[in-house]
Image (cartoon, rainbow, N blue to C red; front, side):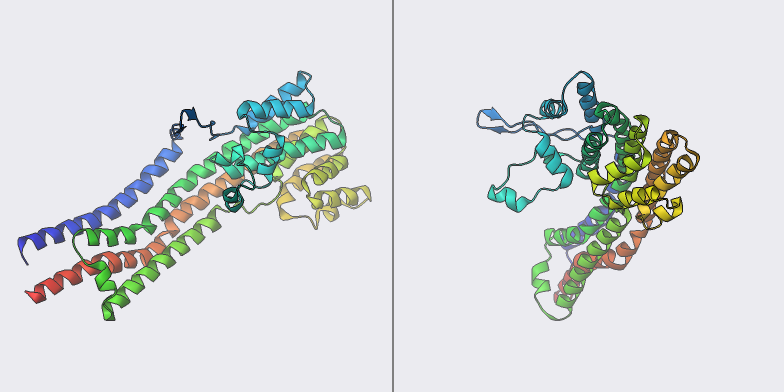
Length: 386
């Protein structure tokens, strides 16, 4: 082996080891940045000809949006104009219909967008689509509940605004805890490909070895399969750990809406029926009807979805004793949000440890099969040829 080959081999090993170190350091840096709450810089607006593009919404404080609508209502505006003026102030193309469409489906259908069948929703550029859509759904449900029970919408939205702000804050904490494991999975997932590219960079005929047949081809096939399996495995673990497991109306926001109704003198059963009608949560309507028919509290809630367990617990003392449930609802919503945030943070921490399994079983062997083995084989072939 001449000096050039020795230098190339040393450079290859250093680059491969450095890639692994950078992958681990990069994940930790991204996690620290997220926990410190460092916001990324907004992209510069691109020019099309001599005109600037319309501003893109990156962040939307749904709690402030709710409070602003309530403020306009208190000032004497009707419901439609309060919503319209508030939304137009955020973006010239944003109206009530667009906001409601985004709340129902925060992810755009790109096939329809590509065909030009629907205009792009101004909210489609938001960073945290799911959390914002859930907050908007709660606001629209509160609007429908106000119409149903005849309670002042401004007071209901004021109560819901506090809940939405707390909900978004809890969601931000959960997102910060999830950034580290997600970044680790992404970086480790591309590590075998990086090794393959660097092996090619130092002069190894990777493609020729992969197509040469025999043992070399078998090693490349095994490495590619392990890389794909490792990525699918790690992404499946992330989905399971990060899935909130709650569909439909968030129970904590339901507590806020019911508390606002109770503060305005609406009965508990009427509040449950109104929330059910506005959100399509049929379990709450069933509970209300059973309570009106004289069923016990346990019987009324026995067949309801498990997500309403906390709501049932905080309402039971007020129903049985005839007291106002508002203090219990407020405390119950705060406790539930704190519990969900704690569970999400724990899940993210456990995920960071469990990701070692697909790394050790699949991704590291793929790294050696696609990056190290070609360099070693190429070096041995050169020695034998000499």
